[in-house]
Length: 135
Image (cartoon, rainbow, N blue to C red; front, side, top):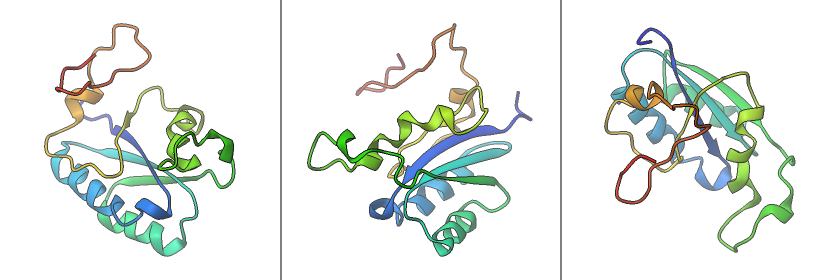
């Protein structure tokens, strides 16, 4: 599967736009082979999209604008915007059968391809608990 692109989804709104290029640049630097990136966004201008593309040159980037699709009633804490729930909508935005979700404020230090290619044994998702053990 090394020739197949690693598919990654991230979410960004105005509060986190500055962090996204760093995340994408670290993803590009650490990951072997082709990458496709889906960016779920809200309130992002054309210049912001250009910054994203510059951070990940030679990679396919598709932007998905949720706009007002996330109801404001979904926010449950003062520190969460309704957009924080965008990852819930990610599986409905494209026809990818598998993708990695990476938080926008992460720095990728190792190749994510092994995670992308990991055998899921029929599970719909996998996550890392604090402590780094994959469950």
